[in-house]
Image (cartoon, rainbow, N blue to C red; front, side, top):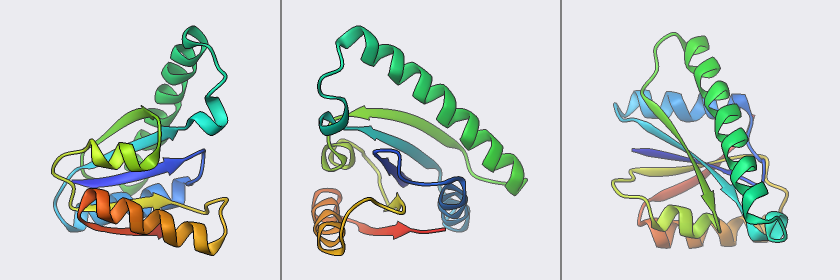
Length: 132
């Protein structure tokens, strides 16, 4: 399985398309994980966060379907909303062949390198950032 991460809203339809192409080329499915971190949403109450999660899942599912249709032939995809850190999201996933991060990331180069290293250690697979 290809795990495509969207961290704090990073990632575009173009990078999602790239991730779907990788999944198709490797004949596997894609899990689209949106990471909702406490740095940005830590002060949101539980009821509001539940509503935000449902809306976000709906919007990302719509984006996934639109990109799949544009490709006309693409692997199965599933949207998951993860509350916590990107590292935890990757650590909780089974059967991951590669982690792809939707870019651009709002981080400096050193922070991106550190994130890639942590994700790779946690998942035990290759990690790369996709850019449009």
